[in-house]
Length: 97
Image (tube, rainbow, N blue to C red; front, top):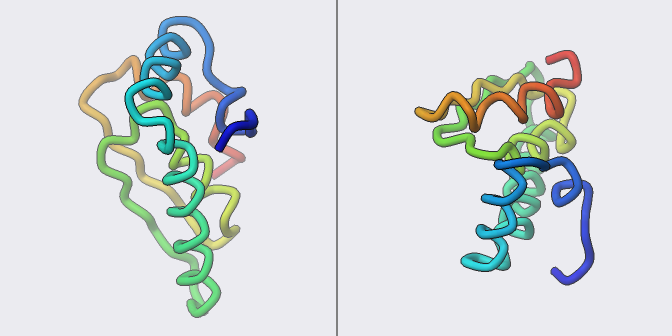
């Protein structure tokens, strides 16, 4: 993935610096997160009720955002042992859910 996406644009400051390092270490991380959302959307299309998704190691929130945009049926519980990593996703990914 060579172009910047909505996932690339939401991180700034220290988390943004770490995110840029993540892109160097694992350039397909954003694409992987997008594909998680695609797979989850396919699953949610078969569900009749709302679904709770537990995300372990939520990190910067790129996968959280992908899940939130994949389906309105998802309620996300994102867990990370680093409180700093949870602050930015809370402010950019909540969508009222």
